Length: 341
Image 1 (cartoon, rainbow, N blue to C red):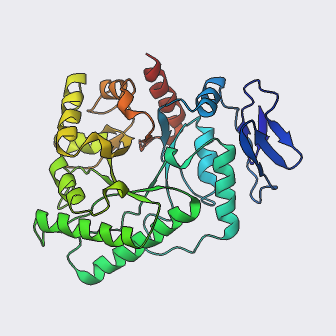
Image 2: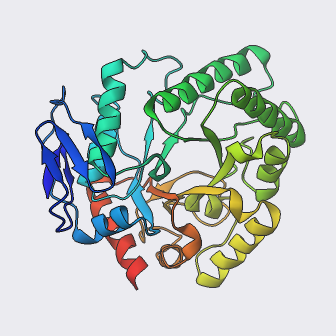
């Protein structure tokens, strides 16, 4: 194993992979320059042989990880995911509870890309999450314009970082317009955002159905997608806790597979672009958003075994948003073990 940019590069026993002076190179891949990192981080433990086999061979795999912090700089996200032995991750591209953030510097962007490469991550393994303040269904024009400005900023940040998806909650109609009008407003907003950007897919997340939040059922998500002009740049993220909180009983194998059949029939599996894997602090159909660690809530562990043994969930980010960060590494290892069963 060889260290570069704060992460480990696997040699796989291949003597034609290595570091030559200032360059990192792998057989069949153009060498790339690794400057001295401006914000050095301690190198975590090396990847397993199995991980590098999947990365180098290009064989499909489960992109398991967690929503990691960008504290100290966005470039730290890949390093933190790496420390968890993750094969995918989620992140915010700016403070999720503020409308405005300072622009990235060229150095921050470059360091993020270097850390992505040296840690073995590609854009398809990362599902950035948009800020919580954005509400594309807001019927108030001034408030909606503020949400659009924030959304466009976040899309631009994804473009700068070389990321290809942005996950967002569809928003709330605030009980001031109908559900149909809210879905139309979200779709129109996505059309505007896509027309003013390139290379980034908007990934709509299902919700638990709290208050006037849209997207708690697949029919509402379909209504939004139906209104999007460029369907190649729209996708869906299914959150297991949100699904359960909204009334989808996915506690058993049969229950989960039935719900996914329903999703396929209403929306289509081709739109599935990522998942959030969370247990639930609240009971079925509670209409509240309360996450719990895997196997410690009302949802239980069985659904996660089923997900990790279903080929349909390979090659999309599968990110934990469970509340106890101290056990994320163990939860990721557990999910990976399920995939081997």
